[in-house]
Length: 96
Image 1: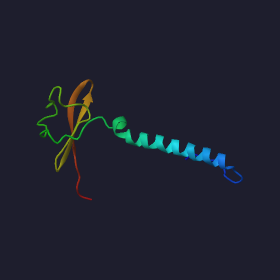
Image 2 (image 1 turned 90 degrees about the vertical axis):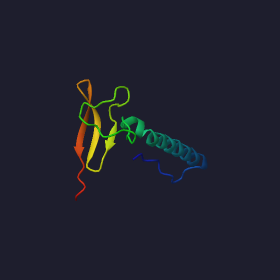
Image 3 (image 1 turned 30 degrees about the vertical axis):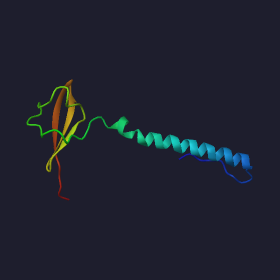
Image 4 (image 1 turned 180 degrees about the vertical axis):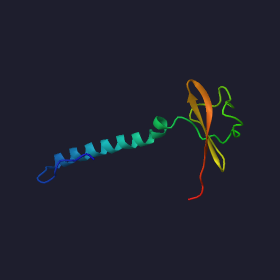
């Protein structure tokens, strides 16, 4: 966390400048938070696609790396396996 200078004995102009700086930094933080999805999430949660029948069940030009399909028991993710797109299946454990 960034430390700001102490305000004891600060002039009105110093306080105003500090508040402008803080406001600018917070606006930049908001922009970064809004961009998290585009930076770190590659695929899409697919609700328009049926469950893959095999790991090679890739629809050319439609399925993209990172796409996700979920059922009640499995989550399927398109992964890049040495240049070949494949579905990876992961069991969803719903018991804790």
